[in-house]
Length: 207
Image 1 (tube, rainbow, N blue to C red):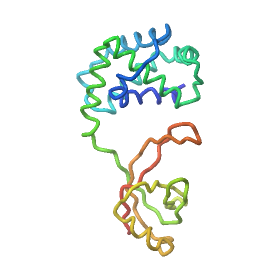
Image 2: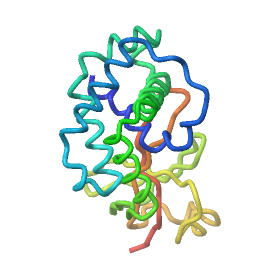
Image 3: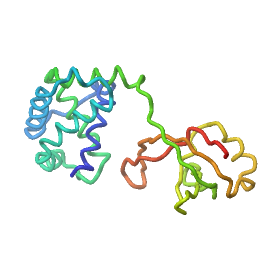
Image 4: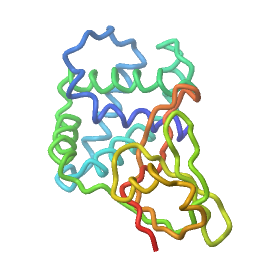
């Protein structure tokens, strides 16, 4: 159940841009769930929620409090709960319902998220290892092996410091020690019909 709730948090980033689009009249389950979520939000101290991550966590906790209604909502919408793309759209419609009923707690939560979305620093991490190869899976993935002899792959999506060496002579870099600085990124993978978190390369330093 918990993995399906992830898609509902997407409405916090999409609701502002989609609020004016055409919507379907909500059914009784959808209206009841929207009312319940608004009631749960009213019990939170929203003055302490100032970042996107905090807003997502707060909204998700309110949805989880009424998780028993999600199967009925999926049935009402005639969607499969295992289809994350479809459930994402259901989540967007649910967010629109909260806006249309003028749930001030949801509006405050969305506003707090929007104000901080661009200003929040992206969490980054670093991984040490030796270069092994480049895998082509739609995009290039740089594969390294860490000190536990475990292979790890990182998405080469954009230009980053150190990328020129992998373009010119990647074969000469085999078994070279390096440090990859990366950030988690949620992407939609059509083949898997779901959202997955990958590690996007920000820079590579040779040791």
